[in-house]
Image (cartoon, rainbow, N blue to C red; front, side):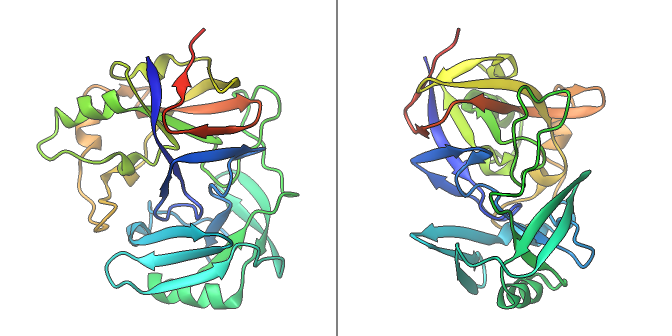
Amino acid sequence: MLSISQIFIYPVKSLGGIEVDSAVLTDRGFMFDRRWMLVDENNRFLSQRELPAMALLQCSIDKQVMQVKHKISSESFSFNINEFGGTKITATIWKDSCDLCMVSEKANKWFSQILEINCRLVYMPDESKRKVEQPFAKEGELAALSDAYPLLIIGQASLDDLNSKLDIPIGIDRFRPNLVFTGGYPYEEDELQHFQINKIDLFGVKPCARCNIPTINQQTAEQLKEPLKTLATYRTRNNKVLFGMNLLYKGNGSIKVGDTLILP
């Protein structure tokens, strides 16, 4: 039996995520997941790919307030999650252009100082629609500010198998999944073309090609060669290292830890 063992949301793209017991699906992934993003002076998205120090900024949400806290210095910044609606900008995330709202000048100043780069914090309002890329979309599904898809799933057995090959084991946080499941065999997520959780239909549509973010220690921002060096020896396809499966879904509701994955 396959069952959900961990659930994560990442409110601000590429900052530290939050492990939760349950999460509600919206029209573009889990509630609060990657609805905020940092952009540079050219309104292009920022990520750990270029700024590993972003890993050191940890998000948390308490009622209507989000706090971002530096994992080492403990410097923090808080804002109301409904605090947006000021200056509107068109931001670029990969090949997509999105209409987003600035959060506040105060937020821009704090993030610029803590990351030592001029940047701005922006939010994706409900009226901003970003469609999942073709030909993988099924029915015009939406994504928030994730790289391309609303959900990512990884099997715990896959991480265990990888760690058995590494000199120093790593945590699942390196791969930033939304869902982790137990009870399967290594890389079973590769074969999850269609399954259900709480009568919600989920579809595995594209294996996740990994960038350099898994090489960044999420607690120290140190960047090394693993685990991509090892993964490349047995998880490469078309010159891309694959780990995890991107999901689309049909239906609504919530998913919680302990829920069973029902296979056809």
